[in-house]
Length: 75
Image (cartoon, rainbow, N blue to C red):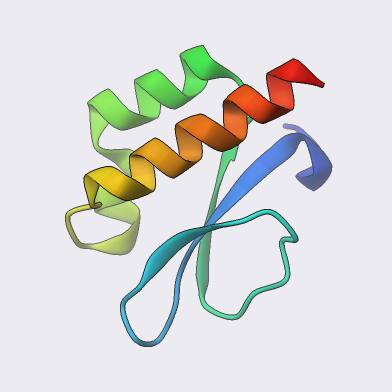
């Protein structure tokens, strides 16, 4: 278990858009992943986000998550 500040929130809104929510306050169905590259790769390979949101996650969303994680690690 980790605190929310240590996790990255991914959101699917009512319009079906999926995006990274760095504030953790956007409306929509949220899923959290830890801010660790290895954890993210496991999540991606297992298709956990696809199952969570009941749809195929676009490649650009995975790219944005990866970019956000690289920023976080760089701090």
